[in-house]
Structures are given as C-alpha cells and as structure tokens.
Length: 102
Image (cartoon, helix red, strand yellow):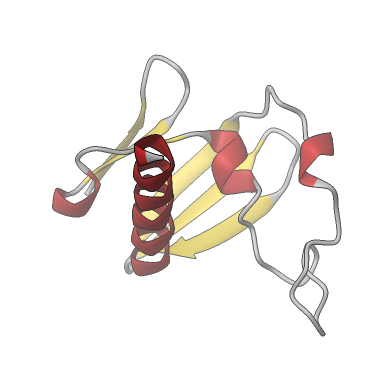
C-alpha cells in the first residue's frame, strides 16, 4: 500500500478501499484510542477535542501488518487497524450523506 500526504497535508492511503478518502490529521488525532487518551472505565476521551491545535499535522506515518501507525506534531501517537479506519470513514460518509438529504 502506498501512503502519502496530499497538497493539503491530508493522509492518502492508496488502497482499493480508500481510493476516495483523504484523512485529515485532526480527524485522525481525535480518534486515538490508547490508554493515555481514554478513560479505561467508560472509554470517553480524557481531553476536549475542540482544544486540539487546529493546525495539527502528521509528523510520521507508516503502514505495516494491516495497521496505520501515525505521529502528530503535538507528539501524540496512534495505531489504527485498516478495518477500523474504513468503518469510521464509511460511517462518516454515510452520516454526511444522510444529513445532506434532510
């Protein structure tokens, strides 16, 4: 799989399932789900997403064993399975499409 940043600093995964998606760093940063960022009892975020730097960027990224590993300019790190990313992206696309129909 080929991974690269587009002109707007969004992450593009060149894969049959991701051909229509550019992933914005802020969108992905909000979805980090490791112990440092989520309450272990209820899985709620331990931070307010609206307080994240809106100019956040990817500082590193790689793909191995069906997982995307990313680091951000605020030093946060996350690992995402390809399947979970696809589910989240498709859910967002469906929600956006449904909202536009109303």
